[in-house]
Every structure is written in C-alpha cells, then in structure tokens.
Image 1 (cartoon, chains in turn cyan, orange):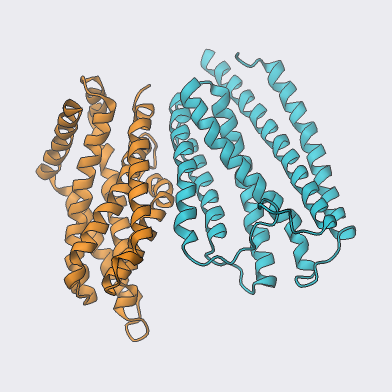
Image 2: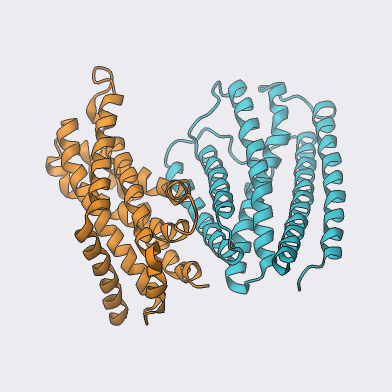
Length: 233
Length: 226
C-alpha cells in the first residue's frame, strides 16, 4: 500500500497528538518523582534522576531492538514502510540514548564519585549510541533509496548481533552499575511509591517514543511523496 | 561446495595478483602501521609506564588501524570502471564472491600484521619468546572476525562519498569484542599465564568469528544485488 498525502498527514496529526500526550505524561513523572515519592535514604535527592534515566534507557533499548527487528523484516519482505520505521526508530533512539548518557553521569558523579566508568552496562549503552550514529550516518551518505534501505537493514541486523558480544566482552570485568531491581527473578526490591513512579516513567517515555516515531515516520513518508513528485516532474 | 571454494579462491587470487602488481595500497598500509607504532612510542612516558604494561594495547590498536586502512581498499578497486558489475554478471555465487573478498582482505591484513609484529618487538623491546605461537593464533582468530565485518562494510561504504571516513565509524564498534579479547589474551600470553585463564576470551573470539562470517556471507547478496 503506497501512502497518500492525506494518509501521511493524518499519521502526522496522530503523531503530534501522541507526542503532546507523551510530553504531558513526562511532566507528570517529574511532579510525581519530586513531590510524591520519598527521598532515598543513602543517595538523597540525586536518586530522583533515576525516574528519567531508567525509562530513557528502556526507550533506547526498545528503539534499538525495533531497528534490528524491522531490518530483518525489511530484508525478508522488502516493504519500504519497514525501512522508514527503522530509520525513525533509530533517530528517536539516538535522542533517548543522549538523555540516558547525560543523566547517568550526573547521577554517577554524586553517588559513585565518578562521571564515567567502563562498566558492562555503561559500555553497552555507549555502543548502542555509536551504532545509532553509524546507522544514521550511513543512511545520510547514501542517495539511492533502495540501496539505503538494504544497506542500513544489514547494519541494523549486524548491530543487533553485536550487542550480546559487547556485553559478553565487558561483563568479564567487574561491574559497578546497580544490579537489575525490576526485571529479576524475585519480586522487585523497590518501595511501592518508587516503583509506582518508575512504572509511570516507563509508560510516559514509551508513549513519548511512540509519539516521536509516529511523527518522524509520517514526515519521512511526506518527504518520500514530495521526492516522488519531483521525480515525476 | 567444492566449486564455491574454487571460485572464492579465484576471486581472492585476482585481488592478490592485482595488489602485487601495484603494491601501492599494501605499502601505504604497512607504512601507516609502522608510523602508528612510532607515534605510540612517543605518546608514552618510559619512566612512568613500562613498555610491557602498554604493549598488548599498542599492538592491537596498531593492528586495528592498519586493518581499517587496508580494508578501505577492498572495494574501491571494484568501483573503478564498474568492475564490480562485471563480477556480478559472472556466473559466481554471491557467497563465493564474499568469501573470495574476505580471503584476499585477510591475506592483506595478515601481511600488514606480519610486518608490524617484528617492528613492535624492535620498538618496544618486548621479547615474545615462547609466547609467539600463542600470539599468532590469537591474531588469526581475532583478525578473521573483524575483517569479516570490515569486508561487508567496505562493500557498502564504497557507494558513499566519504568512504574512508565512513568505514571506521561503522567498523570500530564491531572491532571492540575481538580487540578486547585479543588484548586480554596477548597480555596473559606475554605474562606467561596458563591457557585456562584465556579460555573464556578464546571462546568469545571463536564465537564471534563463526557468527559474523556466517551472517556476513548470508547478508552479502543484500548489499550487492539491486
């Protein structure tokens, strides 16, 4: 199905609506984290950044996984929508990675006493960022649409496979990052109020991700349509 | 299978013959690697850090940079006069074309490494001694992995305007697991540690080679076929 101008514009409006909702939800997270969540005993106020840091890290990981998955599907189905979606997801992923990589050191300096450490999870997320940059740089440097889609799909798939290797190779060093407190076999070891704020944060950042990607996707469709018009003339 | 290997060897032989006739790229890559070693020597304060502490990382960073320079060449030779189109028209499976390119690149990078290693021993006053067979083995294991990835990337970046810049940006993240493994193994080999201390790293290097040679062979048609 080729997108029409009307359908792309509809998607764009829908994306804007979602983005506004997402931004409102993120402001709610700030209010919730600052006013309605207890201060952590040992880390103090610095711990509040966690409610932005963890959800943005989550968003970046989701974005990255979706780039990989839609790359696999693209090479299989050759549907340009998958390529546009992967590109949109990578762009939003880069923004989320940047949020994660700036909030992390701010917290780290207060609690660990160092801005950066070559811990397994930090290194991994840094490389997610580098892979997003490489992916988008390659896209920007290619002009043929089919070629751009095929090449970036290959890079997306290879990136997906690289991540476990990076994790494995850095994991052999001692790790400093707090261990998972949510996704672990026993029940989450977070007080209910903090858990609630974190879950709201996760939901808000996911909503914002969907909003951003929808807007970006619709814009890519519109750009494609106008390029098509230019080709026709 | 035998036919595919024969074709791959033919592609590799073509590339190697081509390189031996001009020698420009190979010589520049070797000189570049030697220069990196020299720069490293001046970047270190010999009174503060002993050569031995720095040696494994210096060796592998030099290998990595040398390999990136060498890999840039792989598909630029095919771009001129649209030589790649000719290769694609030939009755040649894409996997054989990829494996042939991979073999040629491996030969090329191994030559760069073979020249760098004695220079490294000379400049950094490291005695390899009994560690030499181990280091050669680790070098082969690590090089296969990142050259496999570099070969497919060099086929892509050659289509862009800033190929020489684009290749390191894409390739260096993929070089990290093999490089970390190789540096760790080299350090232990130089210190005369037992094999059991390297087993985890050697497994990682082997797994990386298997995964990425397979993946790149499968993904290569998507890079060259319209």
